[in-house]
Amino acid sequence: MKPRLLVIELWGLGDLVIASSFLRVASEKFEVTLLAKPYANDLRPRLWPQVRVVSFVAPWTAFHGKYSLYRWPWRRLLGLRRETGDDFAVALSARWDPRDHALMWLIGARQRLGFPRIRSQVFLTHPLDRPDPSAHRLENWRVLGHQLGFEVPGFGPPRAASAARTTILVHSGAGQSVRVWPLENYRATVQRLRALNYQVQVACDADQLNWWLSVGETGVVMPTSVAQLLELVDRAQVFLGNDSGPAHLAAYCGVPTFTLFGPQLLEWFAPLHPQGECFEGKPCPYKPCSDYCRFPQPLCLRGCTTDEVWQAFSQFLNRVAPRTRAA
Image (cartoon, rainbow, N blue to C red):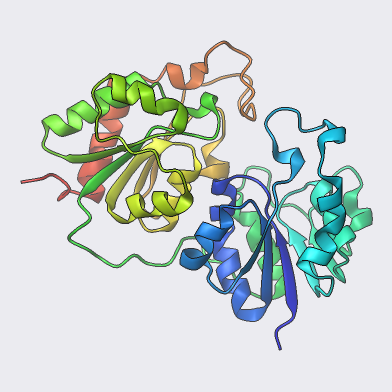
């Protein structure tokens, strides 16, 4: 019988995708339970089918009002031990987050692995040294994997070739507005691609849909679930978009990604694809700013012109998908 392992990853879609290589390998050696946001249920059949998911939206992951303690679901928090089970041999989190560490202790795992912060080692049986601060976030998962006796690969499983994947998927959304390259720039790029007879599928977030429709993009798609997003990814040969969950998902599913980075650091969060490329925004003294921009507009992205991005993207496209152009 496999020992039981609890993995805590309560944040964004991109964070969960970065954890996927760890989850796939860990599920070969452990009976894995993942505590994560509900969209983990859409990822599970495709990325790590042997993992059991317990859905939980942690109040401290909200963008606003995260410390309004009177609004926290205290009954649910205190009931997580019963919901997940209390016989975990090991629990772990790749974040240096005392809240995760307290949660592992509350659930009662016998061994608790993590990267301590603000004396949170009191909740951990195995406090670990963090990787180099400049390292990609995948390295945290690799340290945890090494502690459990296995290696974590750097990329997702190979993608089977398919002649049906001829679409350039352009996704203009992101988790926060400061990560979004201006929509008018995306539209200009889409127009350039279509003028060269490329097949383009535009996808967006809910708050962008009316804008795209107003400029005549009648074929725009607004995925309402991760499952719908995966359907778009499966038809794509190339992905163009912001530093976002969709970019990470596309990369992990084998789609070469061209990702525009603004407030975050690409060395931390670049989508993991061997052919992927990132376009870094303009310098800013406050970078990385954790999505709370000090200016009325994110200058790091607003300063990136369509011509600058097009020059880099067109070279990337010719390199990774020279046959994307339609007849």
